[in-house]
Length: 326
Image (cartoon, rainbow, N blue to C red; front, side, top):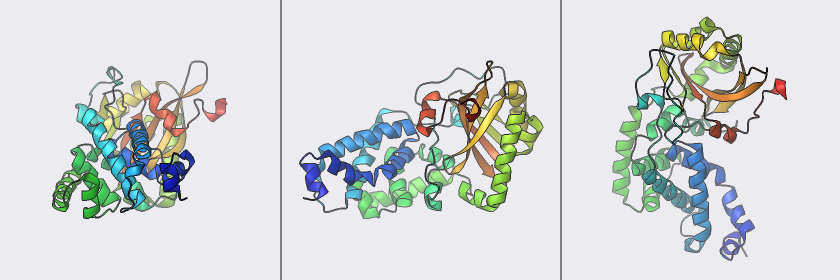
């Protein structure tokens, strides 16, 4: 008996063998659709439960992978209909000029979240498809356009296959793709982060990471600002406040951010340089306080996205205390 037939008869181990090879890519698909690792986890669970219950409807005329993407995409579309789109801080309001009021933590699910890298061998195209700017741009599309763009451009399904997945026509898919491409192209930088990193080269990437860690750990504001573009942005969801430009970022670093010591551990997120940031406490411990993701332009840092939500940090499997305290 093959795994499909065994799973139809209620063999959960056979079902896991069927979906196991696709689970991570389906999770990434949910993330691109929803802009949130937490929502993506919920949508994937809903999709796999639906696949388990609906396996009798899989007739084998299409590939199992295509059928799983049908179930998963539709689970994401249902979630999009129920929840507001995820946003980045500039979508929420203008930058702050002062550093004394960051606003209240906005705990409702409104912010774009970072994607934890766990595959250093991932292809260039796969890394581009989870870059923060690209995923943020996707959230501005209607759900169906979002699905069409991802399925066609990222996952390379044919227009006919996407029409089957979305229960529509090929002409509708092609029309939606054209509109989605135009909308996304208006929101993403001309150069991808993968191209920026490639231009830096291995030595340049290492030097940038080392310089960023040193500036943070020394609480050296001039050294930090020297790494930034003139129009750099610093965001810190779930705080609504964000800062634009070296001058205001420097003022925030001097008066607030560097008021406590930090220890940084390089990690990966969204195919971009990222850091687990451990904040010094009064008792001398360094406790996980945020995940910083860097965006680059022409060898400098154009954005620091500091994600402070403790609920998000668990998806990275990071220890609560810095290694020096464990």
